[in-house]
Length: 351
Image 1 (cartoon, helix red, strand yellow):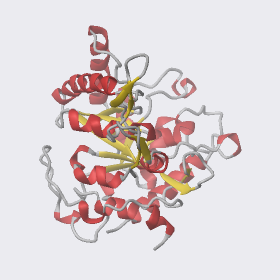
Image 2: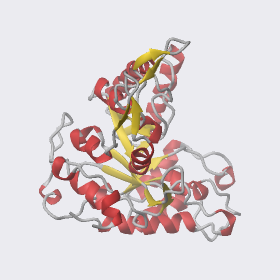
Image 3: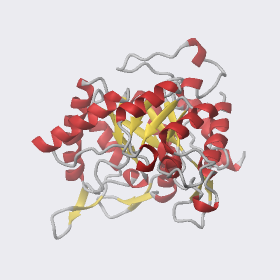
């Protein structure tokens, strides 16, 4: 068995095709040993090429820059979906900032579809934050999105009370998004899969110090309304969590071992995960994360096994991401080059 397969998650056939509350059912084209990521589902988060989105015309002008040129290049590579990480570019391009309406025209002209955004989800529920979120939804509608989300966890806390508050807040904003025909999603990093502190002796502030073994995000998934709150698993960071968070102290003070399985979480309820970040990592035990970010297909995360067994084949929308894709002034074309390498690997996955 290859190192790639050993490092991949092991849920296997647990991910049976499912029909969810959204009414989705697999098409005939999605069955059998066909493409694991259908042509229209291959996406990219623009954070991966942020250096070229925000570049000025005088910065390596031979490499595409700004929304118009970069989106045209991504469409040429083959991407059909984009996820936003901001809506601004260099004001040197137009002499002012670009508008959401102008971005939408660029998308339409290139046959691209906006499928999400790492926008700002308010940390409190007040009249002002509700009004601000309505404006976020306005922009999402202008751009033609079907999802709207954030790039951070619902809360950075380890404590159950804070996650309970996050459940209430996300249900509120999720209901607002659903009223507009949008799915509100949270994108998560490794810390969200650490163990919830929910039991045992209390500290001096009255907070629990031990865990029942429930992971924070799994607690959140179980308590949020499945029609209002959705998820975008960053598969790389989920594997980092598998590497980092392997034990907890139970209510009796005993250390327990529990290995996180990202694939099992998705396969248990695949419809709640409409989006993914398809980010690859090369195994590196010398790194605190256990992996180094690399272009898709050049690492050790077994995407073939993951996509083949997560269930709801043909439903999900993977967005390629690589945080360190930009090459700076030394290699200004690197992020777009990595975008092409990663697209080719995504398009070749079959199962």
